[in-house]
Picture 1 (cartoon, helix red, strand yellow):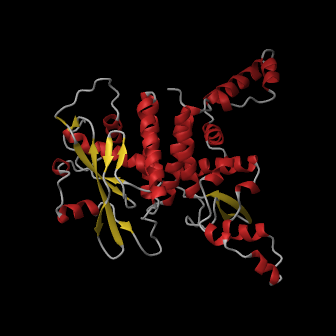
Picture 2: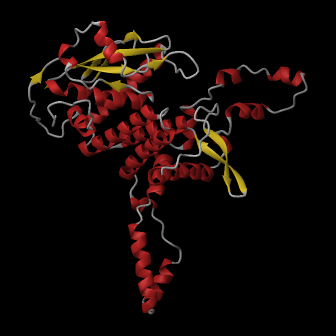
Picture 3: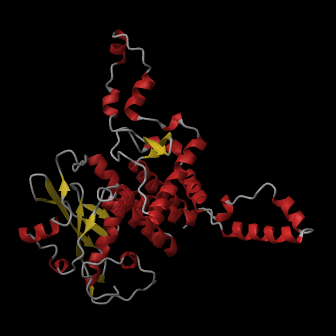
Length: 394
């Protein structure tokens, strides 16, 4: 830890270093065994999670209001650590849990409380923890905060596997992946506050790993007339200058958007998207009685009825169309970063499964575009990054 007191300020590089040191035998200042930290979860943790060096205790539920609860878990760090570094471990762990669950976990940064754990039972202190991450538990903006045991087990198993690999891969890859994981967490934290910021952070998390996984040479394009231009430049000095400028310009192109698309198509191809995303109305769709519709003289096909609830499905598009849709998400990221322009989405909570359809107005023309939903981009980020990491040779 480079600063004596965190002072409610996060430098995530410190969390990365604390979670896994870049040194083979790191020096530990003011060491302590069985240190504790605190995480706040978006749902109730009902079981004790033994995850690598962490033991995550079941949630302590704090009622904040009629509509808001908080779920506090004490986390035991099962190794010798710097006494002041406990909050850094909880920051790293909350990022990983956010990435796996695609729900926002939060850490308590103030290290003074950590010295008193796990014996804190004072309601006032628990309330101090709780107000850092209130969860809406009812009403139109509420999300599921009670997982069944199978869902909780999936989060636990995936987190455990991810942490195991983070300790095995080369440190530079570990550091880069942790930065991408952090971007996913920050996206989830800002989704309701600023959708454009959340969307670009998810795209950026994919892009950063894509530059590790996909080399420039894999996607660079060579103009079909380049050999002709090269021969002409040998006899035409004026054309030689133009040819050199073309080569210089092409050499400076990092093909970032092409690498981004290729990374997704390689590590989480579109044919696998159906496995991770279901329509929010899937249970209703499964109960539709098509025989009754026929009896009423409704001749609409089953597919047409389903699409009216789910929107366009992956199987309705070809590979080139999907590549073009993915590429546009990179364009939205660039426009947000360089122009402050929000993505063209109108309904982040669309009932469609994969895409939001929206009309784009440009002077006197109107065109319809398919926009990848936030949930889709989140799942692409999670699964493509995980598949890349699991593919790294140890």
